Image 1 (cartoon, helix red, strand yellow):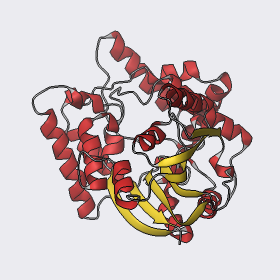
Image 2: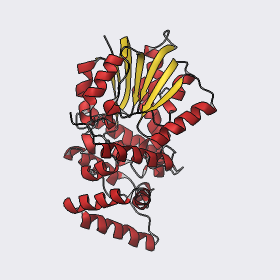
Image 3: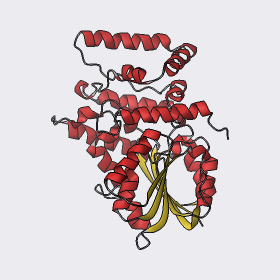
Image 4: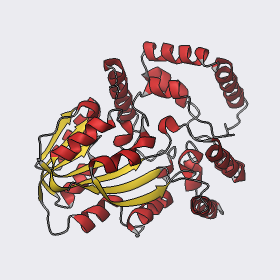
Amino acid sequence: MKRPSSNALRRSAAHWDRQAQAGWKLSTGIYWTDLPAVRRRLNQKASGDPDVDWLQYVVTRYLAGSTPLNRVVSLGCGEGTLERKLADMGVFRRCDGYDIAKLNLQRAVDAATARQISGLFYHQADLNELHLPPASAQAVFAESALHHVANLEGLLTQVRDGLTPGGWLFVNEYVGPSRFQFPNRQLELMNAALRLLPERCRVCIRPTANADRQNAESMGTTFARIVAALRGGQMLGAIRRRLERAVGRARGAQPLKSNVRRPDPRQLAISDPSEAVRSAEIMQLLPRYLTVVEVKPLGGGLLHFLLDDIAGNLLRDVPGNASLLDALFHVEDALMEAGELASDFAMVVARKA
């Protein structure tokens, strides 16, 4: 498998540092998981209880009676939220977190220091080239990490070899189409659901997101975006959409989400070359390295991109909002049950023999 270039790795690290600076994990109403009802739904699918998240579930079900473990590993640890939760549950004596983004790691260190959590160690590392000491960890946790790895085979080999016999891999992950290149039918269903929503629920929450992104990105990255748009024949469409938004703002109109589109994979790779790079292959590859013990489909095939940029509208205390969201949940479930829609997210438990 071809490894990412050093330039691609720098862009990925810079992207996640920008995301950290922008406070992307704050509840802005942009992302589907900003909605408490969505989080409770994901909890229900993972654990069977809307008040118990996936992490609590796997720790209780698979690690009860064996904690604290001598050493655990957290892949793609970001700002350290998962490790602090593990510390609160008394899961480890030592935990090593790995991430490529320097700012995220510093925030993780600062948060652990502020809470005086001992046994937490953070390392800046490229997961494509990660080396774990053999048979050194009793458990590895990966939350939204594997879909950022191009060298999945290499990483899964390291996880397998780095686990002690009987060691666990716990995964909560996007496993849908790589680079978010959704099939036509899935895109059709997303847009049909979008058209069901009243106008007040389709107001875009980040109308200046592109401008903010360009202010943060380097000139080289912005130039690469322009070149990709020209090569892909998308420049005119992008200019038209920007003009429409500008005219709308000048008239005092609120920009509305009119359709769900596939991201241009070239543009996606420019901002973050790691984004969903081989996500569709994760579920195929895992059983080659470890014994899969449990898989919980979490859905998201409809809601993830449908609610992007508009989720916050459903947070408002407006009559009908809760019912609309509940209806979308039922539609996604029915489409999955009918085989019309795959689950784009999954919780997976795997074990080393």
